[in-house]
Length: 230
Image 1 (tube, rainbow, N blue to C red):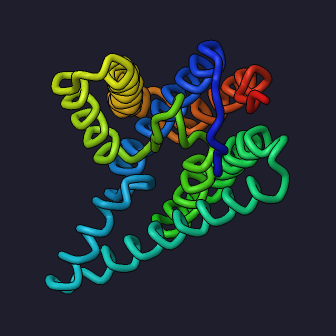
Image 2 (spheres, rainbow, N blue to C red):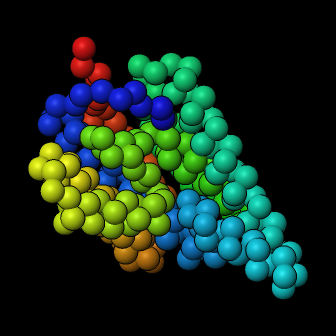
């Protein structure tokens, strides 16, 4: 989602932070599920790109096909989510929640009935994760990505360094706030990744219904979401 730069109240920033952590948890949960069930990531495209490159060298055509599929689906999902944000800004986030949750529910029931293969499974989930990736892109003045852990850790380390080295009070306060937001975001993703393996043995084919329900729960935060201040 394209977010205009604006002055935000502390309450609005808290809403952003909670929503970002919630989405990071869901991203970690679904990514871990994809790794366990299909041996591929549905939101971690750096890992899939690495697998794609090594598969070309080793001639593992199955890995090549599934990596290209999930990367392409993820890109299409981001494209679709961004188009939604440009088409109807006032309700974009609500629409995205419904779409992603609906995709997860639809996939769960279709897969339960027909046992879908690896390629259509990662294609559907990669597309859903791409859309979800466009819901929250900032917390306060800090750009975030709810499923890009490498970027989150990079920004966390940079903001921590600025906090420790800067002599400017405002800059120190801002970098400290950013570092806290980013740390919580990383912890959210990690928590989701830890939870998925535990619940997979319990929920089995219904494993993706939990994030679908959580996404609809997240929607409640939208009513207090960011509104640019005049």
